[in-house]
Image (cartoon, rainbow, N blue to C red):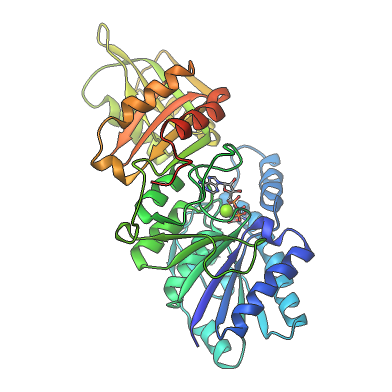
Length: 412
Ligand code: ADP
Ligand code: ASP
Ligand code: MG
């Protein structure tokens, strides 16, 4: 039997009624002749609640126990989905990550998938089971502990299953009907894309568009998984949604494909560090060892042998970054006057493969921001993206201004 992977996000399984609606879609694919692997998220809001419970226990908690707690939301929806399918006379059972087993690294809270041996599930398919419902977002480490794949990780579970089982397609059902030129919750004029290139989706995801987890796009690209994003609330239509595909399969496109934002950014500045060879290594080495994901870096002009070093990282990593810098200072590896954290910033980015061959996008972007009176704090660029750090209060305005100036409401 051909295999299909169908992933349902938090809002699509938020209530027993929605689980029933999702199960109907699964039933339709079973009737179409597929063996289906369903990947479920926790009910909407559930993972946030579990994370809060853990954070209430203290600031520097044991990541292994964090994973034991936050993986539990998916266990509930997997069981409920299997029960709902059984009620519809569809042979189904649930699997937690460790039961599959979905093997991961031991990097708790952001583990990477190493292997998904298909034998256990395939044996059940051979015995007549039609649907394997798998709890997303979780796996098991070499030490036998439960791991999770980072927020939004069920997308990655889904793509990894599609690759491991040679699925015909991986359908990601969510609360919007596809990938848009920007988050439709921020910009009414956002336009749904019929297709988007892997490279563009990868950048948009890593720059904050949470519709797909970054790692899921990476895996789909590497294993050539046919990946589709669509709504679990719309009509059951085989051509619905957005197909994430190779660049060559896109006929028309704009220079800028989309605008992404991330509000979870912090800007940290080490004031007055000695400007000497090796200083960057002495700062960013300890940050990396402490697991801080440094994104943008700016070294300011130096005066009398001293300089300020600015970097950005996710807001929740600020305490870790501060601890690592203080430890390096106490050990005499670096010396700085002060460490200032600005957590009221956001990152806004424009992405498009057309930027490879089209000059002037940066100038146009900066002009549009300046016309709105928005001050740019830090800039970074790559071949197909430009990102700026700005005050968080201007984030929505910046997204809308950029969507306008690049005329994203119109198809290219
Ligand atoms: P799920 O729970 O189904 O995994 P998510 O909340 O993780 O859903 O992702 C879907 C959300 O992503 C949408 O509700 C939307 O607000 C947001 N989003 C951000 N950028 C985009 C974009 N470019 N296109 C579509 N949705 C986007
Ligand atoms: N439930 C997890 C989260 O909220 C995983 C997911 O939904 O993809 O991050
Ligand atoms: Mg998600």
